[in-house]
Image (cartoon, rainbow over all chains, first blue to last red; front, side):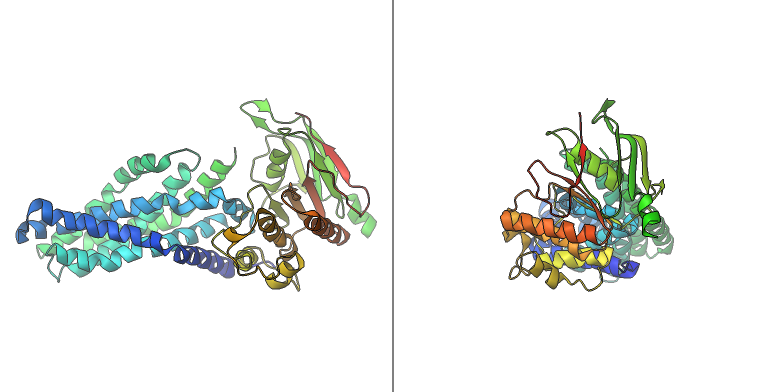
Length: 228
Length: 211
């Protein structure tokens, strides 16, 4: 008998979730199309005035990405709870927090990364100057994993309840306010030609904290959710 | 050496019970399970068979009483990977094929020596269906795909909740064979079932559940 090494277990989890996402790739396209359409609505509603759109561009994109991620977040553990995969994962001789961390990583790769990839397109649609786009991308690279991690904890906490979608939104959105302020602050500073590293560093610090703590909280919450 | 080893039960429950909203789900249970033994958990619907198995697996907390593993108070870290649980929910991803499902399980648990996903699937009667998505399989075939885990993964104690459900006569025979090989190699199993079970390897121990 040979106990499975940790690295292979992590890889197996990550691969499983990526393959599953690929088999349902239309689900990956949904948040992307959603954010594309929402961003497109703003110039229609506010008029095609360059200066106005430029000023709100970063905020619009950040909020749109946040809402698009919220759409997909609900599904992160739902199917695993339904088909019993989560039970099996809990009983596997591997640290549950790390395995859930892999699940969150796979979720981020399949929902947030496509959104980040189309961000330059969204930014151009709103006339954001090309020089600012790298700062926006950097902010998104830090904010989106934060949303995934916070969201995963909340999904785990609401796992036992029915119709948790709305509850999830009500709990997650206020939690994202600090991250949103720092990200928008960084882009606004860059637009005014001011140093923008400080808010980005704050985001990075938050992310480091969340990467360590969120999977542990997820594991504890899911154990409680199944223990009834 | 064998007698000394056999004297210490693999799993021992003392006055074990579980409460749901302060109501006991089943009356306090005492039983011992030695290596090489098979125990049949019997009881009516709602008598707490599944609850007992989920508690032994570690999914539910031990509400009252004690559990001992190899003579010592049971600690989940110590026996992780030694207990394999198969519940009503089969734990199969329906978008993956049986082979891919097994590969994930092997990645998490490790493999028995000499066992391969392909060989195990052929043995359980799923030859030719290895690469079919599980959602296209029949209920019995899904059950077989889940049971294939038993043969692939290393574990000492099997906790099987209704392993015979949905299986045809051939499938039932396969499960009995699996159980017999497992117990003859020093493994133990706890099985719940409404239906009659024809186990060839001697009379199984019976655990009766009372609500």
